[in-house]
Structures are given as C-alpha cells and as structure tokens.
Image (cartoon, rainbow, N blue to C red; front, top):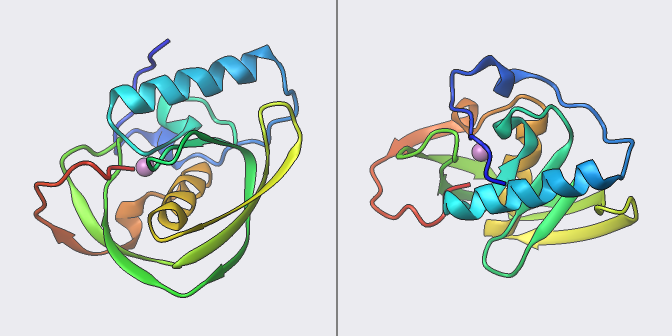
Length: 156
Ligand code: CO
C-alpha cells in the first residue's frame, strides 16, 4: 500500500525514532509499503518517519536491489565525498552535503537476524542520509551549498 510522504516542515520529521522490538507481520507490511512508496516516488531511500512511523526502519535501493535496515547503526566510516543530495520529503531541491566515502552498518533484517553491510559512494551517502532521518536530522541541516540540478534520479 502506498503511504503519504511527509514534507520538510512537518514536526514528525524532527522526532527521535524508537527501536523495533517486534519482528512481526506488521513490520514486514511497513517495509513493503515503504519500498513501494519509495519506488512510486522514484527515490533511492526512505525512512519510516517520512511516512509518519517513528520506528528505526529504512529501505534503500540505489539500483542494486532492495536493502532493508531495521535498527541500523553505523559502525565505521572513512574518507569523504561532496555530492548533491535530495530527499523525497523535499522534492525539487538539492544541495551539496559532505558524507563519508565508505560506511559500514550493522542492523537487523525483517526477521530480526543481524546483518552487516558496507557501502561506498552513493550507497554510503544513502546509509548516512536515511539513518540521520531516524534521529530527526534532515540533510538541509548539513547542506554546504544549494544547487540547481535538472537530474532528479538520485533523490534520497
Ligand atoms: Co530523506
């Protein structure tokens, strides 16, 4: 089911999200809805608070398949990148944000099994952007410079 994506300015996006403790059908439905909503909006990442659910849940797909992160934690990062970034909660805008070039993440999958992932470049950026959402942090807080950009295919 498609969900409504909340927009910047909505105070729900500034809330701290709670850890998931129940790995049940409701969580799986949330993950499926988030993924469908993200694809429909042509994004590459979506965090649960963006659809008004204050849980530590993220979906990402940078073109290499669906990634689901429950209770994600960044365990290591290295390097840096300065690239334009967008957000489905703020369509049509992009700004340069500094992110690490490589990121390691530990999380749970939809069944509660521990997983470890690593990403570089765009995926590293997506991990950081989406995990920030779980802590009420928006990329606009970190923008070094706003950019005019016709290319909207990389909206997080
Ligand atoms: Co976002």
